[in-house]
Amino acid sequence: MNADPSVAEFPVGAAFGQNHQGGEIHAKLITAGILLIALVIAVVGGGRALPVDSHEVFVARTAEEMIARHSWIVPWMNDEPRLKKPPLSYWTVMAVDRINGGDGVVQVWEARLPSVIGGLLLAAGTLCLGRRAFGETIGVLAALMLVTSGAYISMTHNARPEMLYAGLCMMGFVCFYRAWQSAETQATSSKLFSIAHLGWLFMGLAMLAKGPQLPIPIILGWVIGLAICGKRKTILPSLRPISGVLIAAAVSVWWFVLVERMVPQAASVWSGETSNRYFADDEPKARWLDPYYLYQTAKLMLPWVIPYGLAVLAPWLKELKSTPQAKALWVIAVTCGAVLHISLGRRDYYMLPVTGIVAVIMAAASVKVLETLVAHGKSGLAKLLALLHTLIFAGIIIERRINLDSLIQPSILGIVIVCVAAALVIVLILSQRSISIASSCALLPMLAAVVFSVTAENTRSLWDVERVTRLQFCDQLAPLIAPDTKLIGWQDRWEVDQYYFHRTIPSYDNEKDLRTALDQQVPCLLLTTNDEDRSYAAPNLGSKYQHEVLLRTETQTRPIELWRVTRSGKSD
Image (cartoon, rainbow, N blue to C red; front, side, top):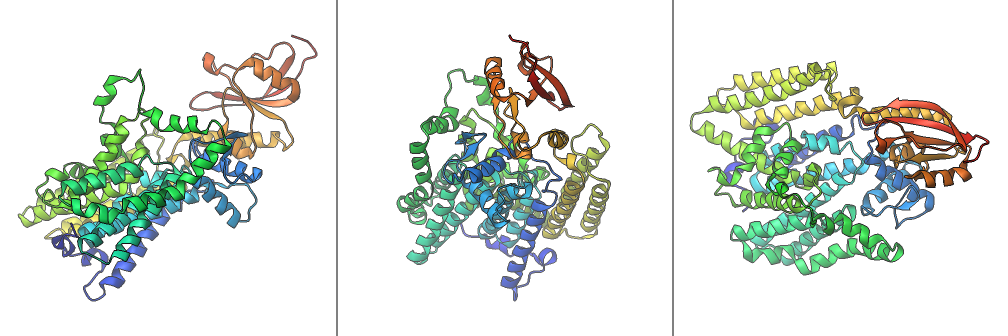
């Protein structure tokens, strides 16, 4: 299962400038180039020009409250312990804030920097895995496909812990793969020992970032894959499971034990986030027939639709079915999808830690299939597939601009770059007598990186309108809310507003509790929803209080109003 020599010998020079004499130097330059592309995509347009969404504020605001409370172990959000996620993302944001002056106010880029770091780890791991499993060309193509995928672009611009989680899981698995290769070649015991344990260290950090939901199925899938490929004898020597599990536990379990002692409800919160998601009496039976993670993973890998389709068929492609490393990697992706399929909670980004592995399979399948077509004198068909993919990609971007109802509307400059990029790729493909797979596949994602960076920088609505609306609303509210102003909320958590005002907002779900709070708070300001739907109806304050609507805005989900509440002089 070492890198396939036939793939490693496939000419890379035309695309990447590598030669036999300076191979090591060029490999380092290639690595630096890919990481630079990954960094540019991850950071451009990720500042305040792209407002936070309702999930990002959980990380940003929790870090702020932990700093304000000097609570380095127990996360807090809106004056309540927030235990749904482990603390590594919060700690990382707190460290970034400390390095950047330590003012305790988490800026947007500070909250998203851990995701950028996770993205770079994921890209580096994908490049390394592709190189070791299939050779230089496939490693580079896999990394380029990954960093220009929709999942990478969106999640590196998001403060959620998912991208950091994915990067740590990927680096952990790359260490396991490297340790397995050492076991296959009978490398020195000390070298094998340290590499395997480094992998468990990464997996322990991943569990401290989000939990064991993906590290466990990744390791399980790897074990199953090795067993299927007849490599059972190398599983234990390469994984070092006993000492490795102890390392992962030492890194992560201490926090769970300590917090469980400090917060009585911690165990019930964690069971709700893990085991309770797998068992339910009223579970809809039709859910089992829905291949959710099959098509949602395809969505994550857009615009690489054709390579993803080839990756799904990898065990049956004649070019790969005799390649054990492809089968083993494919088993990992399937195992993770199967484990997640059992869970009641379904989100496409749950598969994010496996996208690097999927990208490697995609690149291997694409190169092998195109190589076979060329070898059998079907260069025309290979060119047609490359042209089709280019036209589909360019067409989707252009359609987003023409469709005025679309939430994604690239800038004019972005459209121009897309058209120029597509034209260059088409000319490159058509001008070659025998298509150069490496150069043709490499050019498009490089240019796509520029395209997405430009559109992200120039169009805030590239992501969604709701977050822009909420930022505008908070900007309008800011002059009305002094630091000493009493502010409360009605029937919502108001997480986004908590972040932009850098303060807690006590919220109440029933009118009795709200009136009790008003007895102590009035005069105050009240954030409330107000529409005809009873679930979002404005509160009835009774005759004891009167209110004045200071500001109203329409969001995609419901109207939001800011009231000034004062006493009426009457009694209920």
